[in-house]
Length: 75
Image (tube, rainbow, N blue to C red; front, side, top):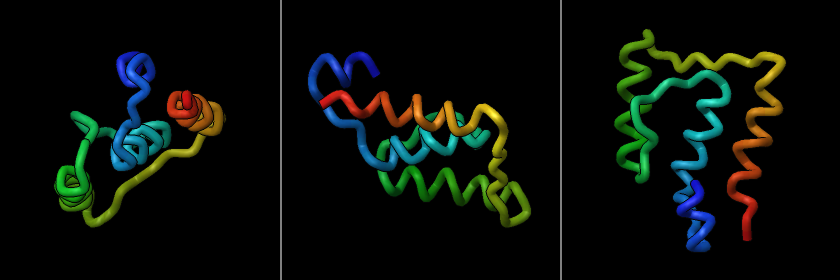
């Protein structure tokens, strides 16, 4: 993230989405950088999870999401 900030770059929206999903406990091996990668990752998760994506909400989720989103509010 520091490289993105230092060079005034914007992370792809799909990357940001998966960053937020990780705050809810979504586990992916690497964060996708394109829509096609995101579709592949979600398809793999759904097929392995009996047709569902399970997300956890706990006492830290709100704070984690805010921290994640603040990473992108650098401009």
